[in-house]
Length: 154
Ligand SMILES: [Zn+2]
Image (cartoon, rainbow, N blue to C red; front, side, top):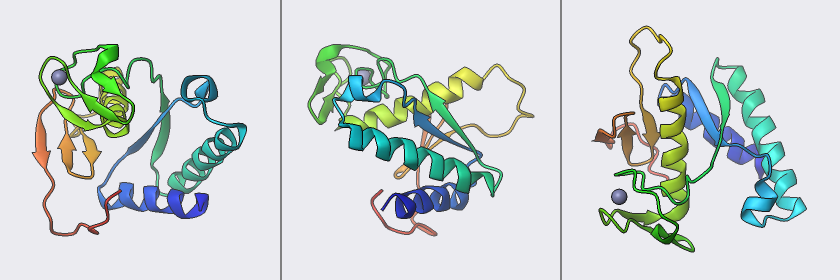
């Protein structure tokens, strides 16, 4: 299963011309999420597989500090413990609502972009690829075009 997921991740990154795959930093993930040792083992191996397979295509894999990414609104930036209720995320300030993991994943991608924004990248387009579209570091959003998409709901 880990091989299949890692293959899908790398394939999607290639389809969308991504140069980097951003992962939540896995250190202390058991303490943060209450994951079992089995889950921790799976996270570590998934990361290793993705890193190994992505390297073949020149795609970097980075780990990002996840502090507050599950409490922060990926739409307006408002951070509050009460934004999240289990798997549901709803911003108390702007009303943005989505699955809590999806919101956190957007924040991981944005944090990677903002961390690297000061570096000269030759003016290459910067954005976070989502299954629904592309999000740039300034919060701008363009919906995905339906052509060329696999139609899967990853
Ligand atoms: Zn918000």
